[in-house]
Image (tube, rainbow, N blue to C red; front, side, top):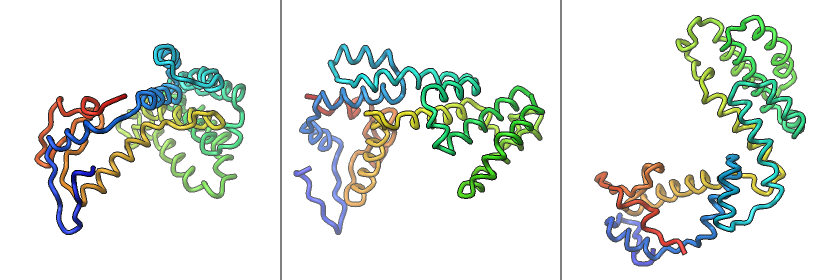
Length: 251
């Protein structure tokens, strides 16, 4: 921002009003924003939303990226429903390389199947599956052996608890673990496609990093809570009228 000189020996203070005035000069092309939104829909598998947004915004999307969405959506749903066998079968049909070339994915999705056995109180099945499917992967992975062993021990420790919620690793039986595995599979399946990465988290990280670096020289309004996108000053003041989206001009 050209109106503010940054001196290395002291911090300048920029008021919220000054910051808002400067933001009025920021121009962001609507086309770029549309591409960012479409990227999010594609990567996260919101096919209907992507279709509708494509028609309304005339945002281009490659046929390959659009056609490849459905298998990812189907496999994600299966994992989120705990149907791991079905998810593995679909992976083998649509993108066999995911399990063949990525040891982490192969181990983690099978570990999730073991978790599903434990959640259903199928103890014998869980133990047998761990011995027949997980141990061979662990023993053949010298570079990841410690990591896999640690993960496997945490899962198998669940067997010691009649009430899984009392386990220190209770998060493993929650829906968040299924979401984690489905995301790993989803991003691995994206390799080779035009849209490979969700750009929004990267931009958010860049924003937070930039604010941190700039705050070493300046005191200025910052976005502390990404979900609200409100600017907050050093004294903590901020309101809904200070949302970044309402202050930037989208051309």
